[in-house]
Each structure stands twice: as structure tokens, then as C-alpha cells.
Amino acid sequence: MSKKKPFFAQDSNQHPNHKAAYFWTLEEAKEWLASRGGGSIKKRNSAVVYVFDEPIRIWGEIAHV
Image (cartoon, rainbow, N blue to C red; front, top):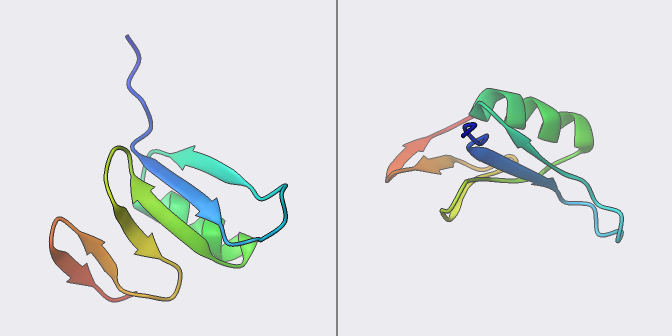
């Protein structure tokens, strides 16, 4: 059984064709969102952990980006 990518990112585009993708690392997901103009990232099966231009919250920790 293959391992699934743990991070899911979705851009903030309101158009019905908005994009979403899965990533192996949070850094990859953040770079993708920056190139798409913002959005949010969540860890698979969890609440949102990153919203573009806001603090990151993972397991109760806050990291400012």
C-alpha cells in the first residue's frame, strides 16, 4: 500500500475551476499557494493548519511566516 501525501492545499480563487493539490511537505504546499495568490492548507484528516498570510497552527503550536 502506498503512502498518501499528508498536506492538502486549495487556492482562494472563487471561480468554479479553483485548484487544489496534495503535497509531501508543508513548504511545498506554501510555495504552491504563494504562486496561486493565496489559499489554505490542511493536514490530511485534520482542521486547517495554514491560511495564506496568517500564522501556521500545527498541533497547538503557532509559527509566524
